[in-house]
Image (tube, chains in turn green, yellow, purple, blue):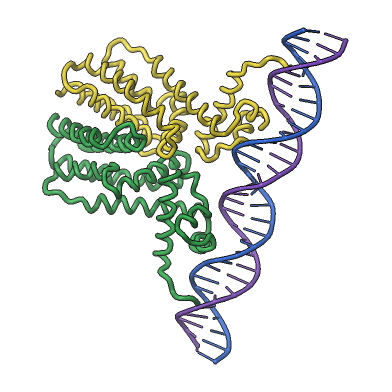
Length: 189
Length: 189
DNA sequence: TGTTTTGCAATGCGATCGCATCGTAAAACA
DNA sequence: TGTTTTACGATGCGATCGCATTGCAAAACA
């Protein structure tokens, strides 16, 4: 056999190419040939590592999901209030990494509307994110329905992300909106 | 020539079929053949009324945009506070009409991320919606940055719509979230 | 009533799609 | 060193794509 290659690394390379194609030209531009070209490899290689296009897309989805999770997990802030703010800002396309990942996420989210296989992990992952945000809210502002506030906050940043990607809201406004929303949430009952 | 048909009506029928395909199977399932089949007409008819697929999709986008605008415009409520609430709820997939239109809107929004021709009308239309919501907010709660609150509110319902479509939030929770968000907005400073 | 124009239906074409198959260079293994 | 297995590259196939072309029945118009 030829030199033993890092199987997972190869898959990740191809997954990255999938995401790059999605970010620049949308989900429907993702074809085996385009992905192969974007990755700078042959189509045979793509097929060698993914049995079907669906499997490739699902892998890319899991890959970018864990990338986002890693970014979120890397946020460390001195106090809960700042932590909450930094966390929400990390979900928006404000850093280079987030700017690259957000369009891909948006495309997968839209596809999840008509594809249950994508929607399922999103439905499963949501409650823990809500719980985590709610926990932070409780730390800053004890009492009140923290879980409800967390859900509202997450819907807010989700929508804000979409509006930023479409160009309806710029970065400065987005940051100001997050701060304003947090201020209202954490000072009032 | 054959019987004079209502040209715009024919286009609207096809546009409806486009939206139905998008709602059930996503944007990438929209092909001339699928749309023709969904509309129960021949492919030649679709081509007769739309020179290109892009033109057809753009028409469907404008069509559903104006449909949503009509639904919003049809909202009438006794007082500004109720008006604001009903307006926001109308943007969510809660009525049969809205439930049919929301997935289509979501697909177009996602496509707008990578297609400026779709993003442009969305960018242009946003400010007036913001201004209108801000106007209502001012009526209920004079003082404060109503425009900023309006932007936040619209981002919130946008994200909430996506989460509902994916199944992360059910209708009951969504209504409660809107009411809660409004309560906080309109009672505090 | 004849002519013309409109509203299609039907068909064809080249490109691209996902996927299957085949061939092969090369390295791990015996 | 010979065998086997791995990692592809290359090619082909049937389906589907958007779009162009062609043909024609029917109704408006002269």
